[in-house]
Length: 124
Image (tube, rainbow, N blue to C red; front, side):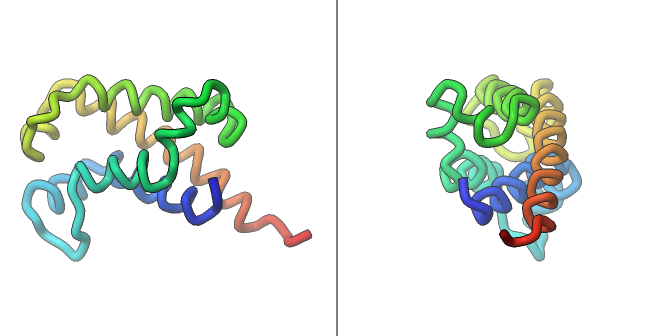
């Protein structure tokens, strides 16, 4: 995954981990951001290529390390527990939503360290 895709993934993970943003943007439709649950998930998994990485055993660990792989797999599993037909407000109240938020926050924290290290690495 290239650095732009990593930054995109980081932004999506931060959105999935931010209840206040979700309430303001997804439920109330207030800006300045313009997003939705579907957009955040599609950006995190499809636009970055994460879905394809998750399908290939060991590729996520090679790309991000075992600890981040575990959190991304936990996030994917948590998202799969949610019914597809929920509107934003129902999704945020769903009993399984907290697991999504927690996994997204843990993954974002781990990925942020990787992105920061890559940005501060001297060119060779």
